Length: 295
Image (cartoon, rainbow, N blue to C red; front, side, top):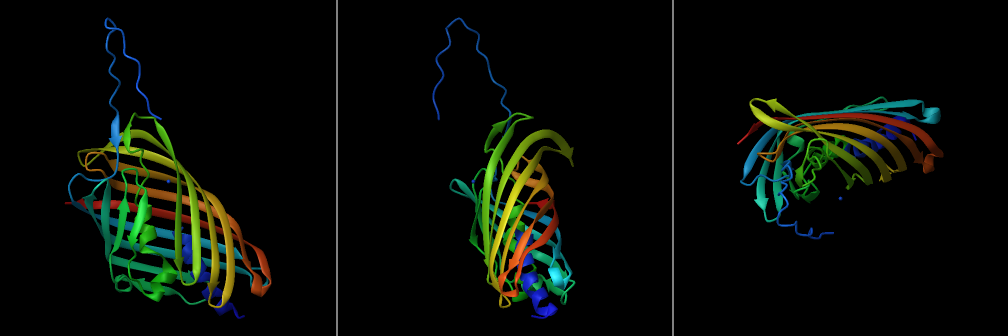
């Protein structure tokens, strides 16, 4: 197999790499005892109480390096930038989100192959998601995308990453909660599964444009598994790593105002048909999403 074919196969896999949930009542107090009122805390929950359309700027970048034995080092970078509208609408106990890019540009640069570029025209429909009050995401409908976009990234992965996990209840500053999040994806003959254990803390409040926002800091321990056949090449990949996330959340409107993430993963990749196993792979990723308007 030549370097160009191998590079094309790796590009499809790398796109998946870039993508990558007792009660009781207290005894009654004696009549003479003073009543103690617990602090109310701040309610951190998803789901505007009335429909709202939020516009965000998005920025995602990933760098990957593969030590491919005799083929040498393969360096791949992925960049995606855009403007997206997310229409939030109450739907029973959940919130329905219709998300669509109004502007978009992305590319994959591969040291073993040609650059793949995409635009807004490569995403021809909206994504539809459903989230519960804690931010557990269910993909109801995937966007229709071109084959080039499938090699660059996933619209749903971007929209999913914009949703922070929340406690879905009132919490005090300094209080923490833990979530185990699993997400799967399948395209271009490759399937992926990422499992993340996310520990989040309501760290503080801040004021932006006159609105009080809640600062949520999170750490995520991530494990990613990828397997499948693309460009006629069977590939298996396992990576693990950590990421740091900060979310500015508007508890009054129940939407995110800003969210950033930086992380890295390391692991191995096997290409059995080529006699390559245990190839070292390292990836770093950064994401940043900023609210532009909410109507």
